Image 1 (cartoon, rainbow, N blue to C red):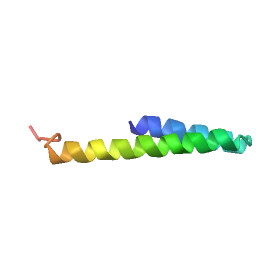
Image 2 (cartoon, rainbow, N blue to C red):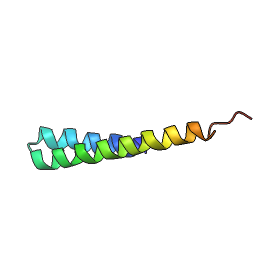
Image 3 (cartoon, helix red, strand yellow):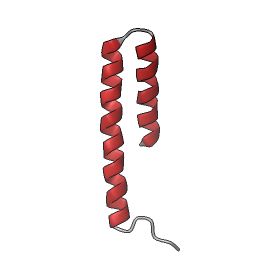
Image 4 (cartoon, rainbow, N blue to C red):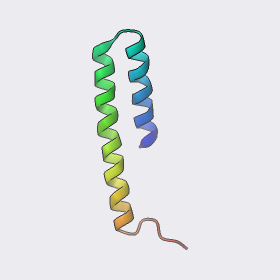
Length: 54
């Protein structure tokens, strides 16, 4: 999930450099959404014991 966030962030930076403001804003918005979803899933995993030591 974090890889997808980084990809959207890089797309936003490249689009911003070339002057595509609308595309950059969309990519940043998508990156934020994916990032927060990943954080929520990580929190759920930690709470439910997804990282059990063996």
